[in-house]
Image 1: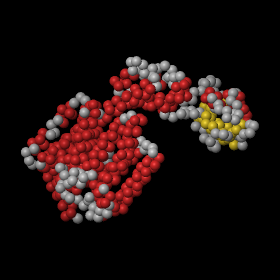
Image 2 (image 1 turned 90 degrees about the horizontal axis):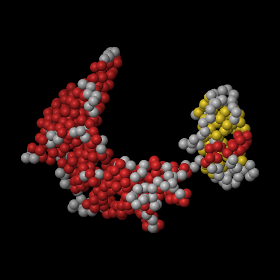
Image 3 (image 1 turned 45 degrees about the vertical axis):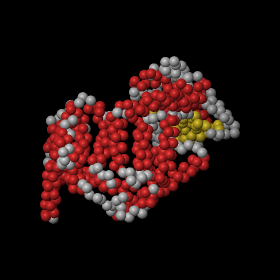
Image 4 (image 1 turned 90 degrees about the vertical axis):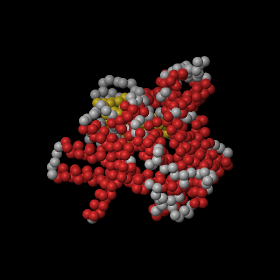
Length: 573
């Protein structure tokens, strides 16, 4: 046991020394992040935003590692020694906070940096590319696992010791913070480099677990999904209809999953579905047509938004990958990775192609097109705020789409300015019954009716007259509880926490009073107006006021009865 422990400690020491010699810039960047975190904590630099200052570090770590792998020990290694220099002006840059919170930083950290690591491998052969990708992923996952397991055990020892021996003091917190800082900012990167360096260039093979997972679980599910999509395409051809816009997301998820499984399948010795993956590009061509029809339909109906811009871009890369793999000679994951890196770099750092700007332009064009078709644009291109005529309510779908686009454009004040209105002022031109639909996309009906029942529900934005003279107020009353109410045997009983009901109201009496107050007659096919509905929900007597959350009226041959109630609040004098 002692010999094994000494062996692993020696392996860690030798690995750390090898990392410091082979990856000096990466090690110094990790050390810089660690020291900066500790100084920020110990010196209480509250005015300094730690995350902003350290945000460039992982980007330059990935950049230095990529250049290191690419340059090796050749003449290009001079670039490696100065690749860290831009981090100095970037850290001092006044716009660092805004950049860190922007999409370009998220794209750089989440997409460009990992893709750059894959490109640095220069693995043209697909099996080498997949092996290199798995080496990076496995090294990162194991580094996080080992380091955090060690951290958890250290914490268990630390807090158990302080509890058992009754130790107290500020030093315990300091030890805990130092431990997590050193582990996450220094130990994890160093372990990652040690493992990646040890496994670099290894040709990995799949084990039994991966073989069972791919051959007997994942791939059969993909085959079933392929059949489902083909059946859906047959249905479209048979009914001669367009596919739903959301189908584009389904096809994209399926295709990308299949391409990933195809890559992993190369690691298996037993490749029983090679016939499927070898012909997948041909199989997926009709699905690509389905994808692009869905994208075009959804874009034409709703315009572009940021997620849809990314969907179009990812769909283009997916199409490029599928077409590339039609030929075994040119089908290489490295070229797909390079195309993805260039594409997302352009999206992130070419202003005119930024997804947010593209989406705003699309929504502005959509809003102008809809407003012009509705006759709502004047000669200067400004929206008219003339009150909506009742005849225009038949165009509520078009007004809903117009409002939706204007709400999206509002994030860009320069793009919204040509319309010359405030969004709230535009919403005010719609009648009450239509405004909720235009703003939120749904109709809220106070009254719902079938042939026999009339259900009157209190809307969320209901407004009732305020009346003085009540000394007690009760809300959140529960049905069939001692502090609530019950409606049984055509009688409403309200307890309000007392042993006996404080109010007993006959259902017939209650309904008669509310019908007389509202002026509504529940004859066949009769529908109460919104004003009548609110009066039906507001019961008043000399002793109390009850605001009902819902009243359900049952229509019979010659009479109407109250079948059910719920209470919003009770006011007592």
